[in-house]
Image: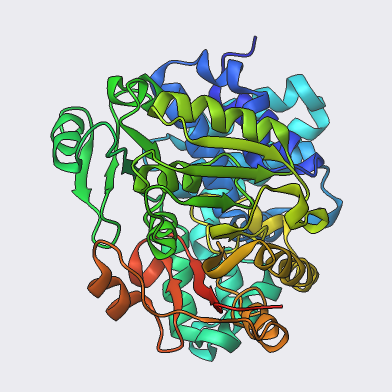
Length: 457
């Protein structure tokens, strides 16, 4: 088994690059190798993987300035060796330059031969000595290219955001996206209150604070041991969940004794929160296409002490009310989306998304929202959410839906802890929940609460 953090990071990144799956899947595939490392090396490995992807465009700009081979013609192995080494040289002060170069060259000799190692050695030594002299596109011209190179964003997305948010706001957003987010969790109030959990965690983490908007959230950094090894985790006192995702469930406002559908449950972060807000009384149906996710959801529910969740592997687009016993009091549809609101946590997403994905997924979201709406009872509540700030996946989906479905309207009134602060600072006058990494220090989310009329055909 490989026991070098740089070598493992290289294998993870190449595996991800070649596959169609997410970085999380590649990390899972190499979990044994990563877990075998010391804590220090494990942290370095993860830092290299995520940092290389966060800053890939900026690193590639440097590579191109010092390589005699155009970037598009550099093979995947030497390209990622260069990216990993330059990430360490440029962004990690604690890594000596000679160590980053020597380790990379040695790996290259073993995996690609002396000729490739010589090319890598030449590029890295030249770049290490001269990278500070490389000129970026002129910031004063306020171009999308400057943002793309300086903040490491695909050019198509940089152009889109500048058009929507303006140059300065896009710079602010991108700067925040490239930071390492704090870990955020949701207190499982079925077992413990937030203050008691806060006091317990304070002993083993740093920079801990209670979330401002989500009433059960706690954020922190630098845990002394892996989170899965926390006694409080093993006792089921919390779930890892970003503050924005917690607010979505507060918007749904589930009540004890109700029958609720989580139509795209995934691994069940919001499902667990729904059951928790119901005081573990009633019925929650967790539906998803992928049965392995539902199995993981049930395992986590057991850890949390929740027994009202029933899983159902279904394709929402092929589902009707006949597949269930009755209509639901509330339905949550956390629809598949581009994930462009969570680039802080998933920097790999920006390199495998395209403009066409936004339109493609928007079409799917409209169909799924309509299908979910058919399962809501009269006077029932439907919440649509996505972890994306793109208008095609947000307002346009809702306005298309409301134009077609006269039996639904936006419901701006809901009962929840912190209702006033959420309503005043996170919900627009139209009734849309919108969060952003730079202005709210949480994931980028969009959600809206819809109510079905008391009578419908």
